[in-house]
Structures are given as structure tokens and as C-alpha cells.
Amino acid sequence: MSGIGSFVRIVGAFARKDFRVLRSYRVGFITGILATVYGLVSFRFVSHLVGDTKYFGSSSEYFRFVVIGVIVSGVMRASMVSTAVSARRDQVEGTLEILATQPISLMALGVGWAIVPIIEELLAGLITIAIAVPLGFNHITPNWPATVLVLILTAIMFIAIGFAAAALVLAIQQGTAAAGAAGAVMSLISGALFPISVLPGWLRIVADASPLTYALRAARTAIEHGGDTSRLIGQMLTLVAISAVLLPVGLLTMRLAFDYARTRGTLARF
Image (cartoon, rainbow, N blue to C red; front, side):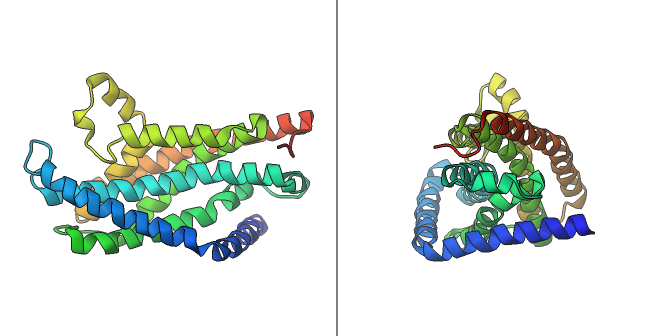
């Protein structure tokens, strides 16, 4: 229990610090919501051009497809990129050296770096759904507890990749760009804004290797077909299995990167 209690205290300390910073820069959150409104309205008009095709039966069906894609992609970016961004910030500010001397587990450090951006993105997802409903986000049978669980599992899965991005920051100070590029590629090929079936055959094989593909499938089942319990459970177990593989790998890369940076004396570096 002491290990769990220590983990909660450390992550809570990071969260309190980042919430104070977030309160000081509220305009950024507000402009993000305005950008979401602009994007949803744009996609609603675009959906009228896409509806009633072999891929979508109506414009509303495509709009639902895109809204869920936007929400899940946002959680992915918050989980993956924010870890690298926070690591780089602490590296530049010199606080990473101090953190490295404290009895803090790498898991607590990585989760602490990402916890507030993830909470912020989950809140943004709820706001996105609230905005999308009057625009035509309807004809769904959601399982809201399962939806929340799927988004949490998505965050866990991609925070593991964020650990690897943070490791790049520790080693070569360049992980943020790599995480951003990886997120953009996964959003493009994994079916966030258009179905995978429109891709060339070889690219569909690549899409099947993307963790985002499975997160999107689970989220769409939870929101649009929440009553299909057997399919939903199977998809959530897939997310758990992927996380179980990625988390140890991500933590190992962070451990190796910390050791490398300590050896070279580059824990604090511009």
C-alpha cells in the first residue's frame, strides 16, 4: 500500500502544480474549445458531401464517425505528446536533475507529466460531445461508463508510447517532434477521419498495427453500439493487452535513457 500511496501522492503533486499553471493560462483552453467548435461545424457541412455512399449511409453517420475520431485522437495526443513536452520543460528548467535525485518511480514521474493534459483532454471530449449533439450527433445507443473506461485505457496505452518519447528527450532532446509526427501519422492511417477501407491494401496492413485503430473501434462501439456487450468487452481486452505490452517497453526505454543522461551529465540541457 505504501507504494500505491507514494504513487498517488507524487502524481497528485504534479497535478496540483500543472493545474496552477493551467489556471494562469485559461485563454489557451478557451481558444481550444473555440477551435473545436469551428472544426465540428466544418465537418458537419463536409458530412453533407460524404453521406449516402458505400462507406456511410447518411451524413449524420459520417459526422458521428468524425466526432468520435476527434475525441479519441485528442486523448492520444495528450497522453503521448505531453509526456515528452513536460520532460523537455523540466530538462530545460533544470528541475529534471532534482527529480532524478528523489525517490520517485519512473511510472509516477511519467504519469505525473501527463495527468493534467489527459484530464484536460477528457473534459474537452465531453464538451465536444455536448457541442456536437445539436449539430447532428444523434441516433446512438451509448454505454457511457464503458466509453469513459475506453478513453482511460486509450490514455494508458498511449502514455506508454509517451514514455518512449520522453526517453528520446532525455537522450537527444528531440522526443517532442517524434511524438508529434507519430501521432499525426497514426491519426491519418488509423481511421480517425475516414474509414481504413479507403486506404490502399498495403497501408491497411500498417493501420492494423496502429494502437489507435483499436482505440477508435472500441470507442465507436461504446458510443454508437453500447448494447453490444460481447464485442465491447473483447475490444477493451485488446486495449488492455496492448497496454500490457507497451508499458514495460516504455518504462525500460525511460530507464535506459535516464542512465544514459546521467552518464553523460545531460539531465539538464538546453
